[in-house]
Length: 92
Image (cartoon, rainbow, N blue to C red; front, side):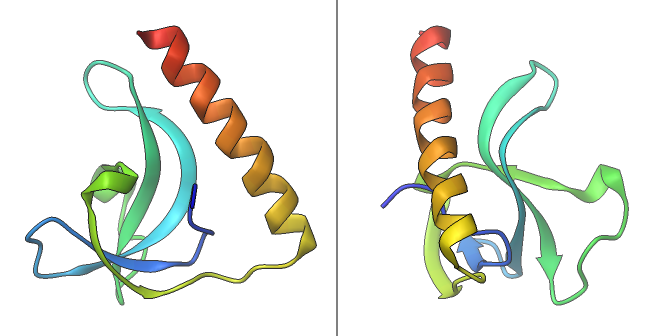
């Protein structure tokens, strides 16, 4: 499956709020960990940089909507999936 497109709306864990994916392959948090996604609460969207949500694909419990997909996005997804795999292998 790989990474979901930007704009996808998902539920992560036991959260009560949906999250919209705003970015992929992000580094952040106290340890500079590599995350699959960064997101914003849905439907409010971006509130401020401190309220961005970092999460991984395996934390998604439900997908409500997929973001826009076209040839450009599919090409990006393929490259991002490969890059994320290599970066994760380098961290091990």
